[in-house]
Image 1 (cartoon, rainbow, N blue to C red):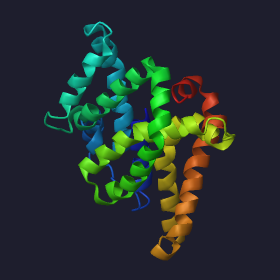
Image 2: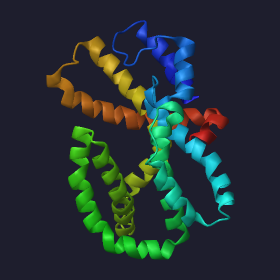
Image 3: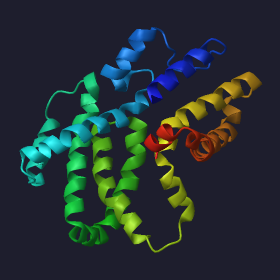
Image 4: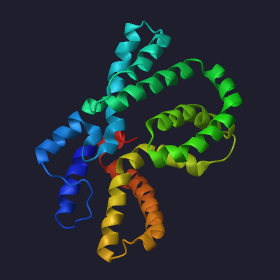
Length: 241
């Protein structure tokens, strides 16, 4: 549904403005690519929902196959990393994500032990995570990105645990709207870009201001949509919660 919404949105806007990124070139072919190779499609950001959907189907079967012994899935999902990568069916992303899902399930099954270790390791993990994050983003080095991801599963839950007594209502509110922000922020950012081009202010000198507007519109627009529009269509409201 999200992919089709982006598809028709791009079709509508690309006829009136050149500002649309990843323009639709071949209607049926583009939709087929979204289904078969989401990471290289016209809305590649949906790979996460795509991969997660596959895991929600496959994991219960794998759980039954190992008779509930989740630890057996660790070497299996780790071995996925040694297999060749491909864009078909998001396998390149899916093989990495599956290991983190298994680690998360194991951590959840040993909740108290996990909390104790997070209390000991989160601060140094956070320091290394912050140190690696910028180079990983700047140089797009796969090994750095994986290292940052491994650190994040200690650093960020540990940070949340260390601050759980604080009053962080704004962050809690954002947390409740994470899914709808993820699904719609690209569209809202695109609308701001189109408006900036039409107004003639899409210049490097103006970009700091435009970036702030993009952030506010992407988050605020998603929250307002979720609170006031989607409740009018209960099925859409349910699947975006």
